Image (tube, rainbow, N blue to C red; front, side):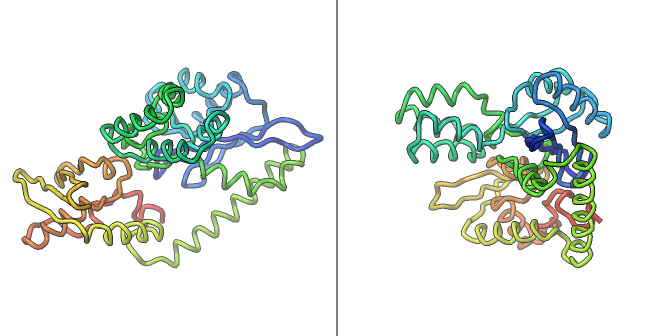
Length: 305
């Protein structure tokens, strides 16, 4: 399907005199499908069926969608791609929450639930909301956490995105094309994507680091955080990594590519616990390589060339 099995879906309203909606599907590789339609179950089913044909997707395909919970999209997913992981963009969830609970405490709680990396942390965080407001607690519990909390995400997409920024960014660039007739609108979009791909390729050609520029910056930031942690070998290839005055403690298994914080498995990017374990292995002359070796191929520059 691509370098990353992660696909954003969104719709943008056309401007008069051409009513309707442009629905877009965006991957990190900037693959794009767009159609002029109205949002409902039938139109989403038609769109996703055509999209599946373009990307060679089947009912058994393992990939991840993120969307804004548009009308009709969820049952369309269930019908066509029952094995897909379906994420909800966090922004609309917060917007709906604000209709009843506008205080900053509620926003902070929601962000904390969404960004926790383990189920245990999520359950503890949810109990805080229950103490704050029982009605808000019941409301958030009605939204299955596997759709919007990192603690429940699988590692199939190697991406922990909570917001549908892939589509939102593209939508903002297509505003000038929405008042055109459908063919002219699609031509406007095609030219924009063509120019964008050229810019991306020029950026890639200027890079010489093994990882992509964003991945390199992310890994360096994680390494700074890792410097504050300590490690102890547990045997059987496992390491206990502790930091945050003992509050943050995880078990890392380098051979299995797992960390009990769950971040390594979800993102494919070495977490701070993993990096500390790798540093210790190198100090003890074990054949483990450098921290970059724990990074999934989707972050390597050669994957995108």
